[in-house]
Structure formats: C-alpha cells, structure tokens
Length: 495
Image 1 (cartoon, rainbow, N blue to C red):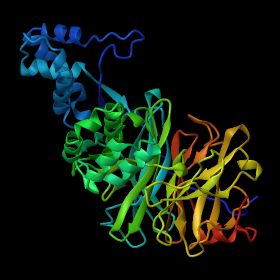
Image 2: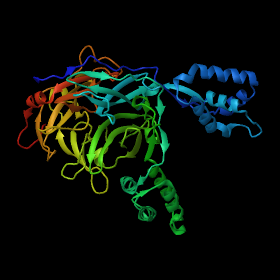
Image 3: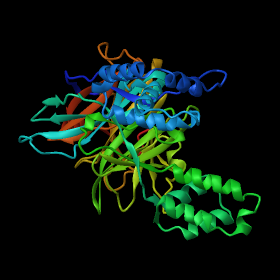
Image 4: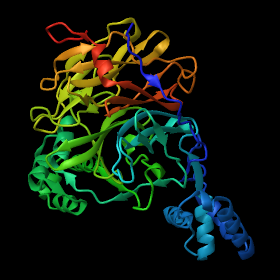
C-alpha cells in the first residue's frame, strides 16, 4: 500500500437536470417502421385558427423562453429545416411558421443521467484574483437520455492553499454554431493513407491543394479533375471518400457574451453522432504561444474514434480526426509541449497497456512504446492514463487508472524522464485515490476516474468522476507524491 493519499475536498458537482438545450424533433423518425409524420403535423398546425396559433405560441414562450437563449431564432431555424414538407399551396403566416418550429423542437437535459470524467486547465481569464489564486476551466462529460455524451464546462478558483471555489453554473446553455474552418492538407492525406485510398484521383487532388484550404477551394479542385480520371471505375467512389474525410474536420464557435459554463460542445459529424466522451484538455505551449488542446472519444453507436480539439480561447474550437496506429483506442492524452522536437501522447492501443506514441511527419501517430502493463492486483484488468502528463522538476507526472476485481477503477501514478519519456523513473506502489463507500455508487459503480489534473502552488489538484455520476476534487502535495514513489528497474519499465 502507498503511504500517500489524495485528500478529498467537500465540494462536489452533481448532475443538474435543469441544464437543457433545444434539439430538432421530427415525429416518427425513431419508429421501428420508418414513417415520416412531419407533413401531416405541419398540415394540422396550419389549420389552427389565428387566435389559437397566437395563444399556443405565447404560452410556449412563457413556459420556455427564459430557459433558452434566442428561442425565437431556434424556432425559425427548425421551421426552415422542415419547410420542404409544407405543401406548395400553403402560405404560412410568420406566427404559424414559428409555431411549426416549436412543434419540431424539444428540450434535452444534457446531464440528466450523469456528470463525470473531468479535466482541469488554467482558465483564459485570470483577472480579478488575489495572491495565491488560479482560475481554472474544468471540462465535464455530460450524459443525458440514451447515454448520449457531450462536453460541458465549469469554472473554479484554486487557492490560496487548498481553498476551492466553484462558480455557479447558471443561465441558459448554448450550442456552438458551425463556422468556417481552414482545412489541413496533411490531415486529408493522413485520412486517405489510413483508409488506403491511394490512386490517381486522390494523388491529383492532394497535389492541387494548398497546405490550408477552404471548402470553396476544395470543391473547385474536385470540379477541375480531368474527365478521364472521373470516368474511371473508382472515380465517383473516390470523390465520396474525399468529401467524407474532408468533412471530418469542422469548427464551432460560441457568442462572445456567453460564459464558459454555458457552452456545450455537441456532436457535429456522423462519427460523433452517439456522443463525445472523456475530453482530456491540456494547455499546450509551442512556438506560437499557448493553445488549448484536447483529445476525446467519438462514438457513432457502433465504432469509436480518437479525435482532437484545438482552441485559443475556449470559445472557438476546431475538431479534427486523429490518425495512425497509436490512437486506435480510447484514452489518448497529449503532452503539454514538444519533447526533443517531438509531439507525444499517452495511449492504450491494446486496451490494457499504457503506452507512448509520437506524431510522425505524415501527421499519423506511430505504434506506441509500452510504458506500464497490468501488474498489481488493483490494476490487473487494464491500465491507462488519467489525463495529460504534468511537468514537474522530478519528471513527467502521469496519473494512471487501473481496473481490478468487480471492475473497480482506482487512480495511481508514474514518473517519466523529462527528456526521454520512454523511460519510467518511478511508480506509486498502490493507488492514490480509490472508490470509498461515500462516493463509489452511481451510473457506473465502483469508479473514480479523471481526465486531467494540474499543479498550483506545489499542490496537485485532481478533479475526478465518482461512480460516473458526479465530480469531486482532491489534492496532494507534489513533493509528497514524488517522495512516495518507488524507483523502477534500470531498464525503465514499470511493469
């Protein structure tokens, strides 16, 4: 057993069913026998008299207007999405169009089922703080009806000492709006290589594209392909693959006057249709200054995929796929800076071993070097990371998760060499944080799990999900944690 334990804070974040967004609702689209009922519903709304239409709309705004930002605009948008179902001879009034939008809308409680798996980074806004304080942004996995996950946020202030103040998460939630993105040629090339789509069409397109390009440029290049290439047997199918891989990258942005805790990152491409899970945020420092980066698991209902986020201010986010053998499973965590000129990440490609992967010249994550395999009783099922490595004077501090009997998750720690992270210097002999009676029950019992910690004023601040149902916070002095670790054998392998 280890002689050091993380100390739990009293403050806990619990799921709040009042935190709702407005989604498009199309009656009948989920029926076992597909039968679109949209046209009939619109026709019934259109036949309401003006008085009833006005009364229903006023009542809807009275009930829901204060719970959402720009509900009027949302209803307009949802009407526009289904207006092709409106009979051509029908000329709906502005009030009726809004009411149609209301009937094709519903509320969704983003965290009604669970709130878990947080990561913590320094907040973009550090104004108005006292000495010894740090404002942090906490990312959250929000789980609602149908086990659909999205990414939310909270803000908190750490210090002085072990003081913790979590800001209220009030006000209407806001979904990001799709904005133009500068696509990357190297990501498109990596996606084509991943799917083994190397032919004359893809080679011609890649040769014609600049390093960064917009949608208009992409379509112009596709439109200028020689007919003798397009007429080949694989021509049309290759164009479909090019458009699909290109569309896997997108950008979303929030209004400048929204607070961080009001922002919700929602699935934006088919690969994410069943959720965005376990975002691991890190503040990455490079030649062009600091930027927020994150990895997350996209789920489409059948398959998972590793994807990445990048943001300068946690208001505008670019989402891109990750490619290569090093990211073919859950739990990828980026290093906060390059090491020896290399972009590195922790991973768990075989499902049970913590590994280290490197980004190659073709923007693909290479096959990993194993760092730590299941060894002790509390981690015999699998080991992985609990977020990005934290840089300390002693080395890269890596929080790990281990799974033991009854699928019980606990958190441990490793120390990697600063210059050669392939070398494990030391490991904690036992768990730093384990499920206790007070916090183990929940959506998924017997779990404590984190997606990223940070160090402030010599203290490791560890946000964690308990029972996959709520979020707690724990602390431990970095010096005490490092001192409690045991050196590994000279070959640098922890197990």
